[in-house]
Length: 311
Image (cartoon, rainbow, N blue to C red; front, side, top):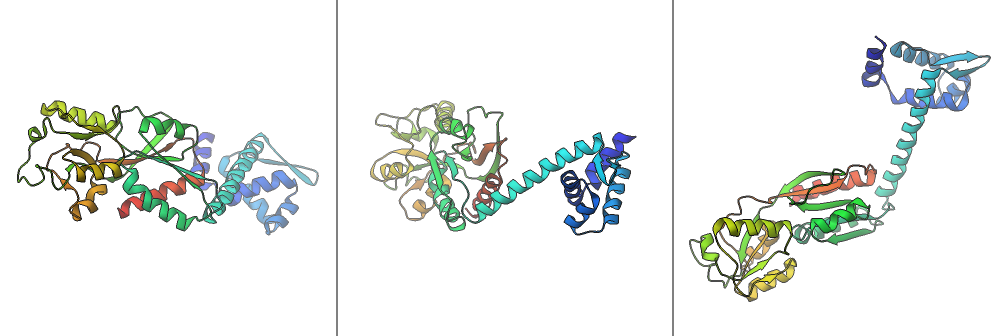
């Protein structure tokens, strides 16, 4: 059946040289001129055409005097061959620009529980590899960043599991694991206890995530499940650097990314309490637009994956 021949042709037989040949015939209309352009002999051109017609079980050319013209099948192939070559050319130009550091700007968004430990080294490496590229950074809740991704202001978002519905226009992929940890300053009463339970945190002051954020919703669920409440004097903040100073200077509890607090724990500035968050939000994901087919975005996604493996 012809449908089977067509399926076989596009799956296993079609080659880039044939796409270029079809486009050249569309431009020049004479096989001798096509052969000269492609630096092959006219019989070689005729052989390739015969092979394609045999594979498709359809004629794609007919001779008109010393010229050739496409059949309806050939016309269809020529139109799509031109589109394929145009897309390849755009890809080539964008890739050269990106690797040369002359590509358009890159927009990266990140939620507060990812930005402080992921973005600094990522930006450093991006600047070293693509020195001519301007990098736009945005930090905020996923609900705030999503519209910027949708309108093209951002190319990617680095986020954790979100309570907000992901737009059907977006795609996401897990790039690393990083559990959230319950932390306090080294002088906190719970920091020196050998055993700590969730009930020990009942009524104590907390540094709380911004209300409505995914991390805030997670913490509220934990509080509800454990039957506890934050105490008077709690602070609502998403600024991790400020929160770190607050923990060291005040008797408060907080929730922070494990990767972020690792160096502070080694330095003795922060203590991690043995309170389970049930592995919630332990996955960090990169989110991008499904319709964003720019080579620069594809390279950025690969670069982010490489960077995540080093953390």
